[in-house]
Length: 227
Image 1 (spheres, rainbow, N blue to C red):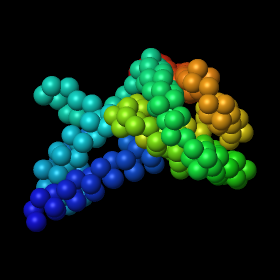
Image 2: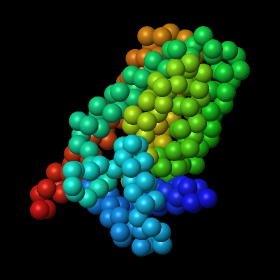
Image 3: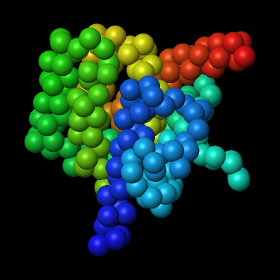
Image 4: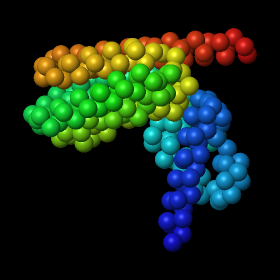
């Protein structure tokens, strides 16, 4: 019973920290204070410690020996490297999926793209497109027979756009650009050409990494200047 409660409380802490990242209450580089979190949520420090360890594994929290934990802060190169790895791995996952992409699978992928089209007509920014974006990319990789590769591809840069630098997401592409970029992916997959698929996915993610990295670099530079 105690173990179950501890897991529940840990999940509560994780949810709270992620919500703080999304609403801007916490930002990359901010410290995470176990005692303050435990008091705010009305729980003991054990579940808080477990939650922070879990977030560290997700790539959202960093720490220094004998020092406080803090929200992970990345520089432009780290961001670009993460996106380059994501594009390379996702392209490889899709290519491995090709033998299993029958008519039903392709129909599902096209349906997910149509959801992107519909959402782009109404979206005010990319934050409105997060769910359809995830659904489309998941549909591309769901039939890959290498689960480790899929998991690594999904996690390689999701923490950047979904949590760490979520507020920047709206700044890097318009909904119209977002739609065109995903159409290129759909057309590459429909061609069933492995080289084209891998090239398009690498370029798709590399461009995201460059744009994200440029905004973060400018913000980091501005912060240093203020000091």
